[in-house]
Image (tube, rainbow, N blue to C red; front, side, top):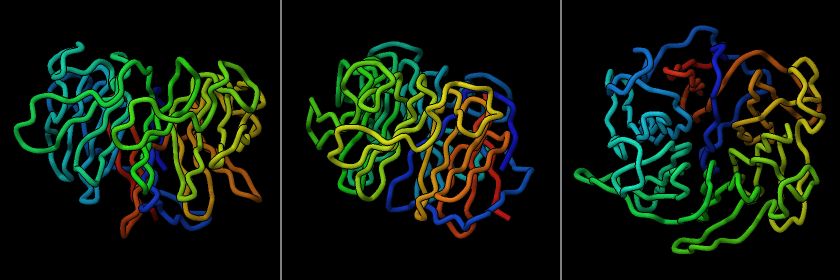
Length: 305
């Protein structure tokens, strides 16, 4: 694991087919290497400005939602410069523009990028084919924040205005509420600013319920969620029952839930809890599981020991 000491670090969902099986008690090296950015805050192709979302393809290509640069930038492993693959034409609502993107994933069936274009209140699709100059609106009038796609190509979107999560079939514009949908609140049927999502193989939806300081699990077809972490007030991170402003999360094959608060990373298992003052982003399932850590301007990679 890597200490970053900076804010605005988030988890990206991981496709259920590549959920890493992390051994119990696994540790990561303390010193990582920067694999994207690292040249200060800016808009050059070797810079980032508040990277919010990250998706790592099968060939280890990183797709990054570069929030304040209003673009999606692609970084192949070993490159010193990224390549803008969506947006990058200033903030705006044209089809060749983005406005504060928070999340991105790849639809493996079509090889398209699906992007939460947060402050344009829309979800857009961009082809990864060379020469693509603009996107296509998939879903409009939604204050999206997090995205996830399950093995059946259902798309899940969190809405921080309606405090709900909807699931969409291909071509569906309305979707079906699968979590929340009862207004803002702290009841188990409600959310307050649901941000990032994870969907497991059973189509259970895990939600970082940010302003309720908890992580919720909604089983498929459930009418209310289960608190799997937090839910005891904001706190300052010293109490393991408290979880200030959770952002990202994922669940490994053993059912271990990892999630990120504004001040610490917490790992919950069925029998024990532990916390460390680290910001961790995403674990990728390859021969040597790695951690991708986002700071305000860098993405850092650390290999498992």
